[in-house]
Length: 324
Ligand SMILES: *[C@@H]1O[C@H](CO)[C@@H](O)[C@H](O)[C@H]1NC(C)=O
Ligand SMILES: *[C@@H]1O[C@H](CO)[C@@H](O)[C@H](O)[C@H]1NC(C)=O
Image 1: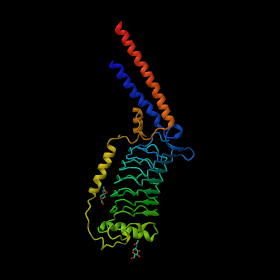
Image 2: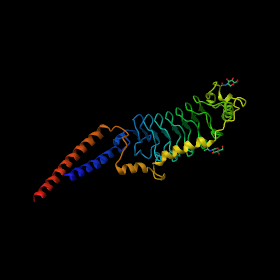
Image 3: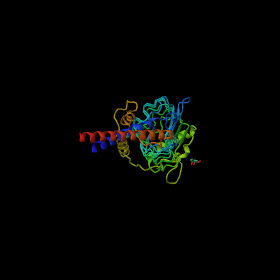
């Protein structure tokens, strides 16, 4: 009696996995949730309550909108097949950490929007391959520190938003390579103007004010509200010791944790998604569309009926064999 029941359960589990593969598409025309424009090669998945990036994003995509979703975690290889991307919007999600190397294949990226997430730190070198980047927003996060040299490769950057974070200082030399910068937003951070490590930024802002950079006066000291660019060496006299291991350790732990449960083969285009597909597993990243539901339900009903019939046939045969 148990045999057919177990077999039926196994079949149901397998069939459920098989049916869920119907949700593997990205574009609406294929049953996915994103609006895809074949002419502009743009894919708009914004505002769809996604908790995972849809699989099978067309590899020729140049603009990808994933803003206004519920993404809390990215696979380290999430964008590795998408090296044609020039625009990537991840604003208004729940990202708490970025895995090391997640943007490393985006050689053509011009605009990267990461504002309005929950980032508390950035992995060292996270932007190092984005040498064509002209726009970077990191505002409305919870960044407490920046890794040493994090902007050093962004020599084409024109706009940088760091406002509304928890930054108290930037590492010495942090802005030195931003030669084309036109606009910088630094407001709503608790800039600590009592320690002398603020003087790098104060002097840099003062110099850039003379060169016409926008937003140099947006950084205000946590205490007193004075503009950081006006802070003097006398005011910022304290020799605060911040061994940079204290900021480096949490970053390393977070990135290790974030990447430890994923594969170590970054060269494969989208191994995680392939793996999920192999298992027939899809994260419940969106509500299925109506045709998908109909398809699933009719497929399900058909399968259930054939299962019942098969079970009945098996039971009948067993019964017949026992009698004989
Ligand atoms: C620590 O500081 C040194 C010297 O300023 C620098 O070369 C190094 O990259 C820093 N390490 C981190 C993790 O920021
Ligand atoms: C900086 O100081 C100068 C001279 O005291 C003052 O005129 C200017 O308004 C200050 N800048 C800001 C942004 O507060």
